[in-house]
Length: 248
Image 1 (cartoon, rainbow, N blue to C red):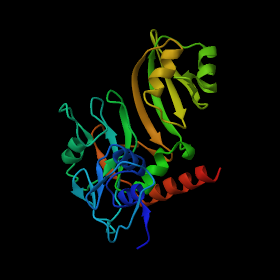
Image 2 (image 1 turned 135 degrees about the horizontal axis):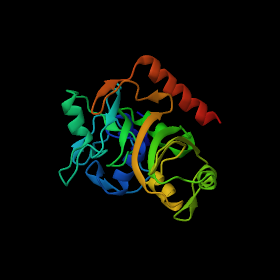
Image 3 (image 1 turned 30 degrees about the vertical axis):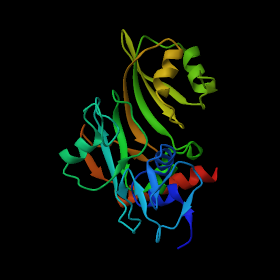
């Protein structure tokens, strides 16, 4: 077989996404023929080379691709394990009697709830998470107080966080109570704690975050803690939207 980039081999084997595979390499957690690889750009032959990830032998054989949608509850870590012993996505998979080896695509804050995509398709996961994809993700946000129209315009135009301006966002008020405001926010990027930092910058603390859609995928009738298979139609629409985003 031809030589391929190591992160691509790991992703295609269904171990994790390509982006996370790159981090594993940089962290020195990948070995090829007994030698630790900690630099990107390394190529290997999946048919001949002995590749280990986290001490486990990688089998790059063709395995069925699996796709699931989960309604992650708050206080669940978007990870398959947690050194602190907190509830994780792995616990959610077990509760739903799903034994497939899949991983979460992207992250959703520990205290947030909502839609999460799970798969063993590393290439698709990379497309969903990559900033150039600009796949919209929709959130319902509850904040303290009542953001002014000027503040919402700032969010729409982009807020500077750690010296980098966020991409334009769609922000609309949905409901106002005596002390709070509920807004729908659509982002095309996913920086760490982005929503919290955006609203913090305009002086409004977030009370709750729920992700209600990822591109064409939505929570629908899912209940908190439930996981279900993607339908063929949903998968087709997701791939079509990803292709459209890349072609822009």
